[in-house]
Length: 266
Image 1 (tube, one colour):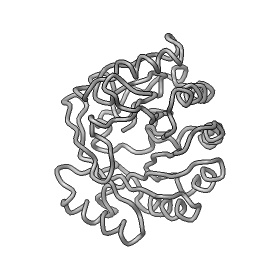
Image 2: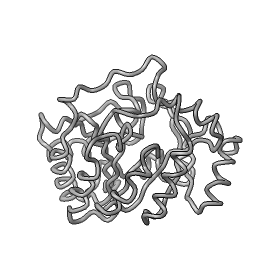
Image 3: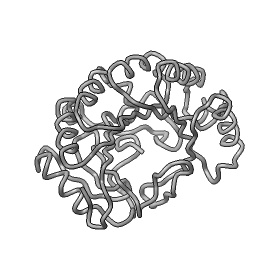
């Protein structure tokens, strides 16, 4: 499955909720957010049908995101349903880690392959400030639970302001080296200003080789994070929404004035 710029599209990121149990400074405004109505949130059965159709078109890599995906009830049931679809070779989930210690083994048992955990500092006080109340010890417990359950590799997503040489980033790097974790440094992005760059230690942000499309929590297929284009699976039908998103995927990102990170995933 190739787009108009001969890029092979084989990666589907699925935001299953816009709800989150943290309020990170770079993700949510201090005044809060307007949540999607519950009747508009995509049902698990719809997600499964999207994945089946996407796999039939060439998708073989799937990642569950949020918001925070582990706050949605029954997420392990969704993992089981997706993992049972033939053709998926890489199945991951991104989490802030606050609930991971209780879910890690369940996720492995239902078919998840690997996990990414957000961690921007290893300083408990700074972590609480950045997340507006998060408990870093829960993240540490989640990391250990993920390793014990056999999720491999365990990757750490570290958002940096200007450089991976910042104090917090360097401390996260040392922590990852000590605990045999893979770290990815993600420069802080701005959807409305079109600010993004290539992820250090990952492939995100490289428009020339972008292989992904996204399913939002309210049932839209988006061909690009930094673009307003989106295609409604409920109005167009799943296959047509996927085909249009791939056919009209832009050559490179520009701006996104319609979405926020809490409802589209990173």
